[in-house]
Amino acid sequence: MSSSSGERSSCLAGESYSAKSGDREILAVVLGGVASFEIDGIIRNATMISPLDLQPSFGFGDRLGLATPGHIAAVRGTKFAPVFAQQSVRENARTGRTPQQVMDDARRAVEDAGWDAPWGADADHLKTIDDIPPFIAAGYTFFTVDPGEYVDNAADSDSPDALRGKTAAYDWDELSALYLCDDDEQAWGRFDTETLMRAAAKYGKAIQHAVDMFRRLSEVKDGFDFEVSVDETDSPTTPAEHFFIANELTRRGVKFTSLAPRFIGRFEKGVDYIGDLTALDAELARHAMVTAHFGRYKLSLHSGSDKFSVYPLLARYWGDRIHVKTAGTSYLEALRVLAKYETDLFERIYALGRERYESDRKTYHVSAQLDLLPDTSDLPALLDDFHAREVLHVTYGSALAQFGKEIKAALVKHDDAYFDGLQAHFEKHLGLLEGES
Ligand SMILES: [Zn+2]
Image 1 (cartoon, rainbow, N blue to C red):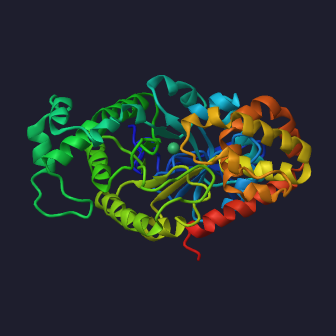
Image 2: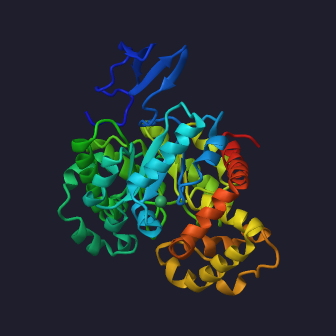
């Protein structure tokens, strides 16, 4: 059974067996798919890596393979189940790492730190069926499918005739019965023929692709977290479109654990939310009505780092039903260490970022301007500047290609500072997400 739910048929709930290991009696109990071993009275999870299902969760992308110790220190004692290995296909291409290497780095840190609770590994932004196998082979437990290339952004402004043409192949009797029979205005809006055609034209092919990806994964993997992300599309996902996507996935049998819409305003990399927070508040309330209606998946926030003004809203509307993804902010914390202790190396990385920004930014939603970049007279405070953060964030691939060895060596040398910086940075994230004011 290929389910992301708690009722995994492969789970031998409560069954136990005894085995001898050396002169110790080991009691193995398989609970919720996680094998626990009791050694000398201490319960340890042997295969702590597992699907996280609906637990509140937090993704710690680590592009350098050195950040997990700091991530562990921050997440320990919080309600969040961590995803310690999380890398997209794009990130792997830019960092020159494989899914297996990302997994190995995370696993080593987990073992060294004695982390003994479930954790996940996220194959992030999978775009094609061919992207899947290396992540399966490396034992990933969380699969994020990004069908963004199949989203038809023109549907937002197409004429009714054009929409009719694009959706001619759909079963309109069925869709009408599902979406047009309700006269009541729902929190997410009400569908009429035109809005339904727009939603179907915009997301129909993307939904079909997500269904295909889910079915493929189900053939090769038992029990996994499945996320559908449309966060990198050109226009925001309206609450009605969110409803349409969730409803279509559900009725086609896709067991998704989380869904990542694109929200209004700008969620740029490594910086706080840009936009009207009051408008976002109202919009999130409507999205929360959609997730509450289905009641079976988490809201996922991508580009989720440093959105300090938004976390209290997420905590209020979703509570535990939340997944947040971060990645580049850990790289920026690494650069903060370099800015403090290895200023010469930092200045070379910064100069390269200035050079590479215009081309490296192309696949990202960022708005930093080169002419507003500060000089390096105030280090490491420069790492708090909006423009510097975005420029350094999106040029990480170029920096690692040129200075990767030096950067890693410097971080190993200053590992205490990196650890402390990461711990403090993520404690701030997690505290706000837990609802602390
Ligand atoms: Zn994303």
